[in-house]
Length: 109
Image 1 (tube, rainbow, N blue to C red):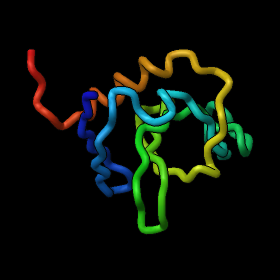
Image 2 (cartoon, rainbow, N blue to C red):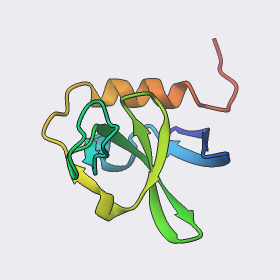
Image 3 (cartoon, rainbow, N blue to C red):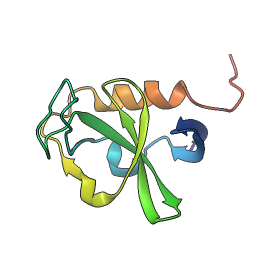
């Protein structure tokens, strides 16, 4: 199984993780709590789609690194903030593009 190292910046902090080619939860989109400024879904518990990339440990305990479909950014979320998403269209393609763009390993051509 191939693994990639990816580094992302979240609120000024760098998160460096290893990601399997078949990441956790098989590249499934999840929704998360919305917020009033969210242009896709401002209602609580109905936010835009995100992709769980890797489990990480934070000062507050275990969490997930989540790739945000809306703007290609990243967030750290806990399991209780993530909800199954009915629409899985494009999850694998988005996941591959997102991780390949952040891989910090040499590529062979």
